[in-house]
Amino acid sequence: MPENRRAVDVLNKDDLILITGAGGFIAGSLTRYFRDQGFTRIRAVDKKPLGEWYQRIEGVESLSMDLSERDNCYRAAEGAVEVYNLAADMGGMGFIENFRVECLRSILINTHMLEAAYQAGAGRYLFSSSACAYNIQLQQDPKVRALKETDAYPAFPERGYGWEKLVSEIFCQEYWAERGLKTFIPRFHNVFGPHGTWDGGREKAPAALCRKVIAAKDAGEHRIEIWGDGSQTRSFMYIDDCLMGMDQIMHCDDLLATPINLGSSELISINDLVSMIEKIAGVELERRYKLDAPRGVAGRNSDNTMIKRILGWEPSIPLEVGMESTYAWIESQYQDRKAGKKTIS
Ligand code: NAD
Image 1: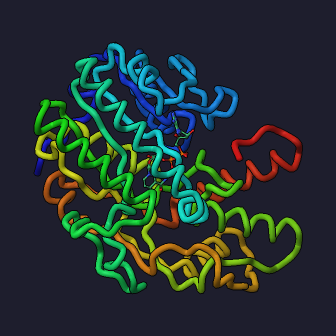
Image 2 (image 1 turned 90 degrees about the vertical axis):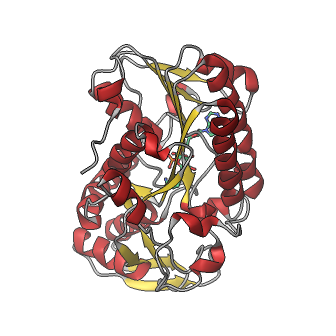
């Protein structure tokens, strides 16, 4: 059994941890994760004004800065021992199919952030890559073969967003090869959970479907619109597994500069996901399929052979367990918004 190391095993509690994109879903949760473990010097950075961050965590240095600007990256990286770069202009299929230029421009963030981390003498650097980096020709069947790490090449990733991830991965690999900066490259497969975007156009399928079910129930309208024909399949990883996985990958030297899947291997169709949410909500809705809506690839799953071999671990929180808490959280956001209170979306 491999001996997995985590930040608590290798860092001093007052080592400076930089987390970018911390006004968003995953990096905000990562900030809380490290704060809860007693790290006393966490620098959280996001380009959104502080009042719009999804989570503001006490005791954390929170800075609003645009990290596509080189000087801001240098300022952010000053003194950092570890850098978790999760900042990116991103969203669900509705966003990444319609805003490719914005997605591509995230290349500036990782390019400047890597150099700034290197110049600052950071010990470790994590880049949040994505399953969208995989060759889309291998994802044309809902009964997809799970994607293994080598399936990114020959390269044919998602236009825009996927290409940015693939090229940024290469930057990370070369910073290790040529300059000795220890880089780590998890490829996240759909992450969901409380504190994620749930409305406004950037939300992903699990949150969007929860919101639609909640709204239908609330309005007494027993109908739901589904993007595509609902046969498309995906796996969804609960946020707690994502945080645990990032921490272990970042501290495993066998994974230096090596892209690795970080995702659940529990495959589900969108139709079955809707049924799961209906069960949680206690309703049954008539389904209307919007066939011309963005739907992404036909099928995508994570092959976890490599992560199990190297870490002896894989994301394993059952989808239904994660969906229950996500549904409850989105329902409370929905009610808060109705009551005129501040919400994240
Ligand atoms: P998110 O949109 O909630 O968070 C990203 C944050 O980055 C946002 O708060 C945004 O304001 C910030 N940002 C964008 N441009 C910036 C800039 N120029 N300077 C500073 N901050 C900037 O998204 P998330 O779901 O938390 O995703 C985090 C990372 O994980 C991203 O890199 C994303 O591509 C990757 N990822 C996420 C998923 C997923 O399912 N959520 C899947 C694969 C990869």
